[in-house]
Image (cartoon, rainbow, N blue to C red):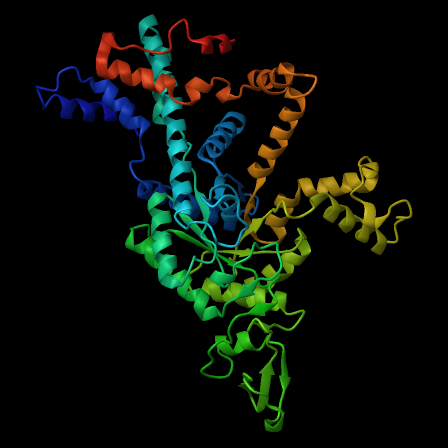
Length: 530
């Protein structure tokens, strides 16, 4: 948005109303520039276009993968984007992730809950809205600081610097980035999924991640007891999400279809099959069954016919049916192909470990049917990355007849190994995991679901240990404030970050010279200028 064009628009509106005394055209122009996104739908349309461009770029160059971190509060998301702009100068290919796990654990009115879709469904769109509220405020704050510099340049008569600042406004990169938002298993049937999807899109979400678990049996992807649904049930929810996008005019919205089949050994229902070889028949072909004759029937038996055989699926007292062991990868591949053929845009395969070859083995099979299939992958804190990669290196060395006598595979997590050749090689594989898996396993987007949950716990533990111990106030000053100042952390000026300077600008717009502002010489935030 052009500064001068926006100013001209404001001038034409205000000067047409002679009784709007005291309204500054430039103040109006600045406020409009500081609030570029009027609604959540504006955000969703803008960010969906970004994701589509990034997906196309990745198809041409796998080095252009994207990343995000899960954030459980608007402030956390805001600080993440401010940090990215500070360190890298651009937010390109960097998103936000909204984790259902963190909503359940941190944002439910019931208090901390497990990741089982027991939290209020409205808390998910509420967090989307909160994240974008904080990102909008980051835009307003940063642009406000530029506007103040423009005023100072004018006061000095420095026209060249003023032009440079005006150009920086015209080319300003917003903190608004795509959010991939977790809708779990839809919190009910397809209608419930559609209603919740609309709320999330209206709040600003351009990408919805939905999983193929049974909604009322939903489990965290890294826990046991997961139960999947037949493909037709899941496809109905994918369609529900697409209808929500289309109804709201976000025609390029993104659906991320997640399969939990690799770790899910149970299904709640036998799929409907109209003919041999259809999708329902394929789903049922993975059931753990035994062939039966009429005389072997028991009361309440459920039977299915496959070809010339009559089969009895093995059923638990919970009324759940088992899949055959070892079929998880085959079911994942079928899930993914079916989802992409029915309107999904990206895939998510929930795995039990970060292993590039395992992921690639499934993606290669999917790409035999859909060549441009792409993954969103959970670089999960549920994985013990150190142990997993040290064991991968150990196993590789063992297969290469390399001497591993000095290592105990079961104890590779020990700090005693931290400086060893094996540990250093493992760390290098961890460092390049995202790049390598983007190139060889089709991973377009890498995310960490719960990083800020863990960083909050770690930093709070460190502060509590120091502040309440012998270090006292030095525990805060040396390890928090001093480091913030020296690292240029914006929120060291917490009044500014919370909007005090923006409020002062508005006071001056509204009251002119009568405004009582907070940013005078007595404001202690002035101590942080240097």
